[in-house]
Amino acid sequence: MRYSFRGSMKFLLGWSIVFAVRLLPFRAPNVEPLLATLMPFAKRYGAGGAFAFGFLSILCFDLVTSGIGSWTWITASAYGFVGAGAYFFFRNRAASSGNFLLYSVLGTIAYDALTGLTIGPLFFGQPFAAALIGQVPFTILHLMGNMALAIAVSPAIWMWVAASERAGARNAQAFIVPVREALVP
Image (cartoon, rainbow, N blue to C red; front, top):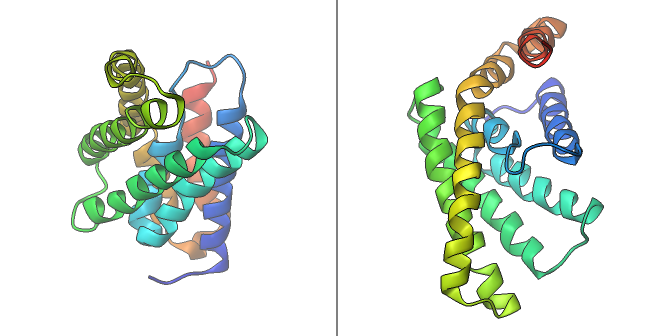
């Protein structure tokens, strides 16, 4: 894996956009670009980069919004491992819409099962049955959001991060223009 300044800037820009979108008020719950961005980044930046992307996304978001708690370390680690898992999933697979869709389902279910079924019962005395019942609608929304973004956004992000780093501004334009056109009516 070769690292470069421009590659680092793409990593930071991608992470900053995900962080900013997660801070937007009045957005649908569980519709956020973290996994949709994490998958192409995992293929490009490796297991360590993907772990850091997922872990730091959760850690910094909690730091800014709700504060750091015991849940932070579980959720941040879980998303870090989802990111590392994405690297191993995509290591020998094409960065296609179908593969992004498949991993969005696998990653979402793994993350929601690990976090949603452990934090309440372990830290807040919630009965496991209540955690399971409450997790079902949450996971359905999470799946719908991640699946839609995996199909619509992940391929464009992959084209941007995989593009030759010598192309410079054209790479950013190749990512920003399609996303802007998809978001602006």
